[in-house]
Image 1 (cartoon, rainbow, N blue to C red):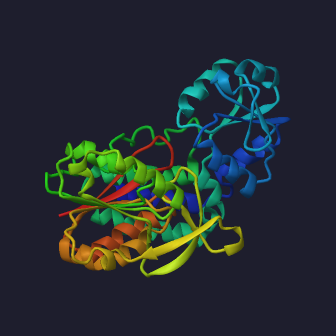
Image 2: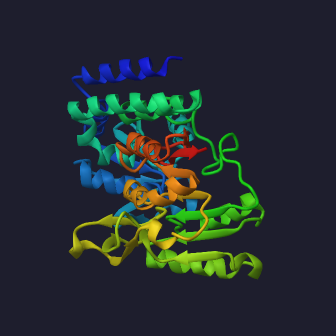
Length: 379
C-alpha cells in the first residue's frame, strides 16, 4: 500500500469536513434522556474526568459486569447499577463504554437491544480543539508524511495511518486499534533484541513494574538498571519492589527519585494515577506535590547506556533533549512513548533522527485503545 498517498488523501478529506464525528457522537449522547458509562476501572477515571472537564455531557450513572461493584458509588457521585437494571432505560439512554474490552461490551449491549452505544477516549476529548483546527490538520499532514519517509517497515506505516484515523473517526463500530496492537510493549521481538550485557535506563519507572518486566526479558542477565520516577509515592512502591529482589540482582539497580527534562529545576506535579510517571503541571496551587528534574546526561555521564525507555506523560521530547549527549555518543536502543500529545507522533521520531541519522525508526502500538504508541529506534 502507498501509505503516504493514503494518509495524504485521508487528511485532505478531513480538511473538507463540515462536521467532525466527535460532534455527531456528542449531539446524539446529549439528545438522550439518560447517559450511562459502562466499565469501571483504571481507564474509566481519566475518560470520565475528560467528559466532565471538556464536554457538557451529564453522566447519570454507571454500570459494569462485575457484580461486586453493583450498588456502590464511584467517581465521587455515580452509582453503579447492574446490566439487568440498565435494561429498563434502553429506549432512551446513551452508553459510553470506558474499558479496553469495548468490542465485547458493544456486542453484549447490542444483543440486548441498546441502540446508542459509543466509545470516547481521554486524549480525543482533551485534544478536541487541536484536531478541529484546520492549520493543525495541515501540520499533521505535512509532518506525518515526513515521518512516513523515515519509518523502516510497512507495519510502522500502517500503525501511523491507523493512529491518525482514530484521532478523527474512532468509535465502537470502527476497526479502532484492534488490528495494530500487540502485548509486547518495549520488547517487540521483531525489533528489540536484548543481550546479557544491557544497561537499561527506565524513565518513568512508576512502581517498578517495567523494571520487573526487564528482569523477566533478560532472565536477570544484565549489567545495570537506572530507574527514574518523579512521584514520591510511586518511588516508594518501586523501592519496596526492588528491595525484595535477590541481592546479586538488586546491587545492579540504581533508583532515582527525579523526573527527567532538559534542565535541573523544581517542578510541581499531580501525584498518583495510573500513568508511568506523574504529570507535570504549571499551576502551583493545584499541585499535590513537588519534585526535582534533572538531565540524563548529567546523572549518567560516565555510565554505559544500551537501552532507554521513556513514558513520562508528555515530557518525552524535553527528556530526550536532556539525554542528547548520551544518545549521540552511545547510540542506545530507544523505546519512546509518543501518544501523550498529537505532535509527539512526528516530533519524537524526527528529533531522534537528527541526533543519530543512522537510527532505524519503527512504530508499534500496544493496547486496543489510544494508549501506548511507542517509537523504537536502534542501529
